[in-house]
Image (cartoon, rainbow, N blue to C red; front, side):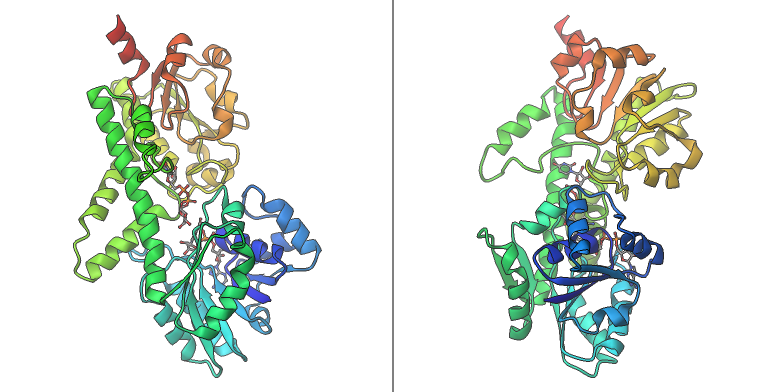
Length: 443
Ligand SMILES: NC(=O)c1ccc[n+]([C@@H]2O[C@H](COP(=O)([O-])OP(=O)(O)OC[C@H]3O[C@@H](n4cnc5c(N)ncnc54)[C@H](O)[C@@H]3O)[C@@H](O)[C@H]2O)c1
Ligand SMILES: O=c1ccn([C@@H]2O[C@H](COP(=O)(O)OP(=O)(O)O[C@H]3O[C@H](CO)[C@@H](O)[C@H](O)[C@H]3O)[C@@H](O)[C@H]2O)c(=O)[nH]1
């Protein structure tokens, strides 16, 4: 099949490459000429494990192309995906200007029947708005389909090639047939394609993200309470998660959820509820708790140093909002570092992939280093914000030699608290007794 994907970011580039991988002819469009030039020069524009191989193979085999020319790109294709940004507007609602702007342009450009697919995360009712925007200028038939994307950054290729499910919202039998043919290779393992109406598909995406954000937030509250009552959230998590009705995944407490999706999508669903005069109390609490949780690590550090970080050197491990990505959108590290700097600390930071993006925010206010141990030299404390695998089994003796004080604040519960007692560290993590507290208790 011939496909155009408009917007070549995290979703557009992964979707386009994966559609090419299943034998389709894909042309990806972006209005960022630099991005397109880089991709045409054979260089990826994002870090996403597993993408490089697929990208090289499919460009080499002439199934995957990149352009800035929208009109040329959509001329001969059967399906047009919109993978455009939907950032939060001032009032928390999803900004549809990118999607609707391109939809209007498409109306002028299409010369034969097309299936136009909303891949971006968009509020209920957007498929109708997109159809209206195209219709303003269109002289040919078209269908607008809602096909929300559920991939996670860091494992995006796997998620896309082997989705738990594909959700397609359409009331057109013709479009349903096209979408079925397109996705058939992705659901051969037996996972379903759910066809439904457009509004339900749009709501499914927000409901899924908001539920997951709620689940994490619930665990963050359990963790905070565990610290107060002297329970260990890791044990609690295992005990809860082994109940099949609950399940083990997505129960990890930490420094609050971040990324380009959960924060904006929870906000946007809340805005939808406000607009429809529905008081969605759970979502309000989720946002409130998460806004506090983003500061939990820096607050612990401040408390430890009696609210004064002047003259203190804090090392930070992990800047990306999660491991295996270079994405820093709404990363908890931003809030943590900002708080540390504000309190007078000198901050040295390390991340395997996200430093370049973080430099754009902090410039020379933070010292970015190339190796994880370099961040620790003469540090008064280490703050761990992202759970990259490389941080999981470090050389604690070497760390102790490098650091001024053997103090770790771990926002991701990477280490065993008993081990940290043995290694002689002050170790403060999320929802578990600090080693120092345990020692006091034991003595
Ligand atoms: N990132 C994720 O993990 C993820 C997962 C599922 C859904 N989504 C949703 O997918 C959508 C895209 O997200 P993303 O993370 O890929 O965003 P992104 O910012 O990485 O990519 C969007 C791309 O669109 C391009 N663009 C903007 N205006 C354009 C125009 N007029 N013409 C052509 N290109 C244009 C930008 O240059 C950019 O490359 C959002 O609605 C998001 O909520 C994202
Ligand atoms: O148990 C957990 C799981 C995740 N997180 C945090 O939650 C955020 C989001 O993580 P994750 O969902 O893994 O990453 P995303 O790439 O943002 O993916 C989410 O957002 C995408 C965009 O809508 C959806 O497509 C995905 O299904 C959805 O998981 C990150 O800050 C994680 O650190 C936790 O704190 N605890």
